[in-house]
Image (cartoon, rainbow, N blue to C red; front, side):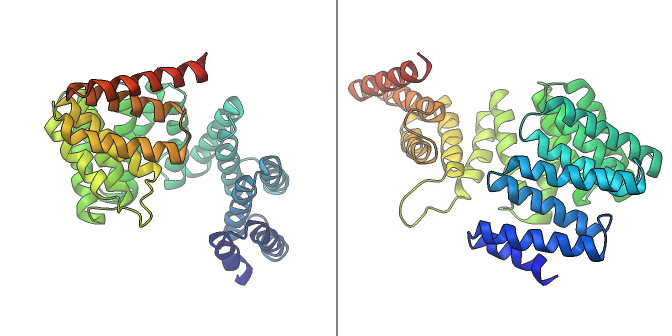
Length: 330
């Protein structure tokens, strides 16, 4: 237990190599004493794989999970709970490196196994269902993804209630999927009550509330509800506390850019200008002067200056954006 608690502290301290050694020792001891099928061992094994991946050792991370999966499948059978858990973990790991077909196969095997073992409405089954739905949505297969998201939301609403965190998570995933599929009105209809419920439960500056506000702002802007969109984007922007050294984080740059675009579309270029400057600065620090995000922000800053009659400065920025595109795209 001490080793298991020490590893995350070493990660926070930036001592990743030492954290890796401690984490490996913790997994080995848990495996020897409790077995690979123990819940704590499963959690530690996945944590080790994530740490290895973070350290750039993706192949070793994959092998850690494949070894655990193979050993447990041989010992406990293909439909045992621990095997299905390792399948999910391996699928999530492989998704980050683009192994699309194997990821889908693993998610589907885990879902079918849990349906047989636990039934269609068990929470572990619904978690597998949700994993597959998010994967399919990311792959542009929205029809099946929507059906799965709706299934999870209905089941969790019935078993856990409308305000349970897992139900709210399902509602968020469904709303995002609806937005991805261009079903904007239904997405907004899902996001609005979700936003209010999350704000009531978690407070105005929780990560979930701000994620909802950001997505809701995008959808409202798409439907030309610019004043309502501005309220949401401003909520996100105001949540970012300025750093002492004046640097702008990527997240703060995103928030400034979204709010600036919304203001510019309302003809409020003078208010948008400093926000565009902030976004450009943040994107240069987070990415590079010629990254696509940076060049888009520069181009929109130029348009903002042009709208205010600052034609010389606007032309210089337009040229910088075009030159940057030529160098990066040819």
